[in-house]
Image 1 (tube, rainbow, N blue to C red):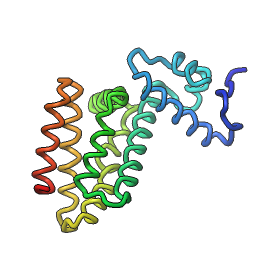
Image 2 (tube, one colour):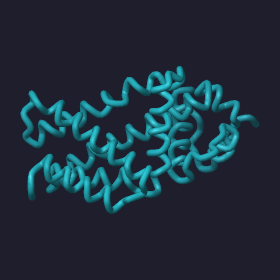
Image 3 (spheres, helix red, strand yellow):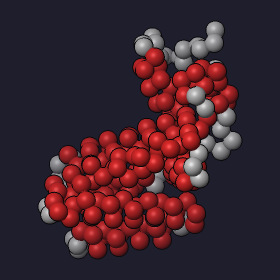
Length: 199
């Protein structure tokens, strides 16, 4: 059979559902194993489908990698929303929780993949063009909402959200390049102190 069911999965639904299932499985695989030397054949074997089926649903390895990053980013935005609605957490506490999630060593492969896709997009690779559209805008709406909920003036909430996003991404890149977890964590704490004030 060309497209065996992964053990324990529910029966396949329409193509869109199957595509979502494959993306979720691919994101989980990359989170657990990284993406170094990732091939469509190897990924397909790991998640229980043929590499031809991955090409059928995604068109190319680059397009699949973009979808993995986009789905991973959406999971992070969903996590931010959950943190924001948790009782008793200040905006700085929410930022710290999200930072811990983003810098979890087990998820470093996803962060590397994110920056690799950014590099491809900047070089004009056609399969990565759609990724650029959501690079900033995908995060701005939830971050602006978080700023306003924390009491920021709506007129400056977007600027603050963009500044926060750029700082977090810069520190994530710093961590990937230097491996200096203590230094990057300290820089993040200083940023939060400047951003939200002491306390």
